[in-house]
Structure formats: C-alpha cells, structure tokens
Amino acid sequence: QLQLVESGGGLVQPGGSLRLSCAASGFALDNWHIGWFRQAPGKEREGLSCISSKDPYTYYTDSVKGRFTISRDNAKSSVYLQMNSLKPEDTGVYYCAAEARNRLCVLDSDGMDYWGKGTMVTVSS
Image 1 (cartoon, rainbow, N blue to C red):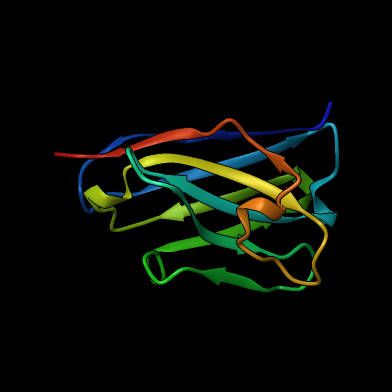
Image 2 (cartoon, helix red, strand yellow):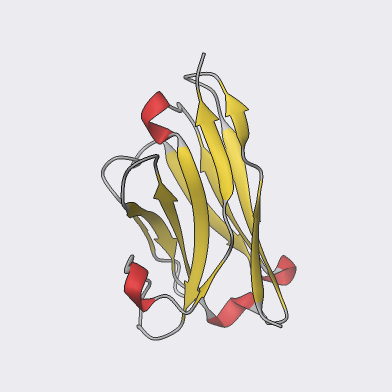
C-alpha cells in the first residue's frame, strides 16, 4: 500500500523552529515531486513549498519564503520541511503530497496523487 506519513509536528513558541518529515512507504519517493500544504483552522488548505523529483528545483510561497526550507533524501524516501522563525499564523495541520505528472513540482492540491494524514503544528506562547 502506498503511503505518505508526516511527523515532527508539535507545540512551539513564536520564533521557534520545527522540522517536519514526510516518509514514503510502499513506493520509492525519488520519482515523485513532493509538496507541503497547510490547513489552518477555519481556512482552506494552502500550498507552501514543493521540491521536484530530480531537478534541484524548489518553490516557496511568499508567506514562508526565507523561513522554511524544503529538502529531500531519496535514499531514505523522505522529504523534510525545516521551519524557522515560526509565527502564530503558521498554526495548522501540515500535509505532504506527491505527484509525478508535471516536469517540475507544482503546488496544486487537485493535482496531487497521494496525501499523508497530516501533522499538527501549533505556534503559541
């Protein structure tokens, strides 16, 4: 069974850091573009960052640019999201998702093929 599993969420104070992980099971991640999405309470899910499968291409939405860093370790079938300088508005459920349709990664919720179940991040003092 193909699965993505997120981990690393938790409670952190404003200005703090967290590192999220997205691990694949049942398939090799190296052929897939991976995106990180967030759904804040009462809001629609939004795309944050993505990384392409082979080309060293990454994309960040403006709200996280300069604070978040996406990376991947294909040998471990894992993708990471390092989140620094966290703000209360970063609170939400974080999901990773995979697709292999495009030449480069695209943050399109409707176009993702596999989703994890999410990990909760709470930024609060």
